[in-house]
Image (cartoon, rainbow, N blue to C red; front, top):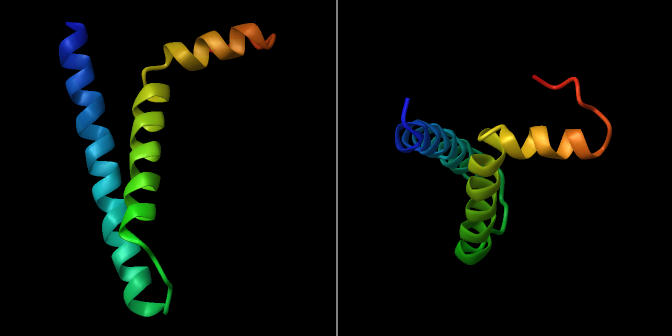
Length: 74
């Protein structure tokens, strides 16, 4: 499978995940009187999406665990 196709699947997964998170956040906001800024929400979702996609690639986790002495990760 080409790396481009794998990235497409990963980004699709991250987009779906964050769509669900958006819907859940809208539900929470409808029920609870929370103060939320658009800028703060956008920044939080951007950080979440970028880190989610990065770590879902698996090689960063494999590299990190290899460097902290946990080489048994598949």
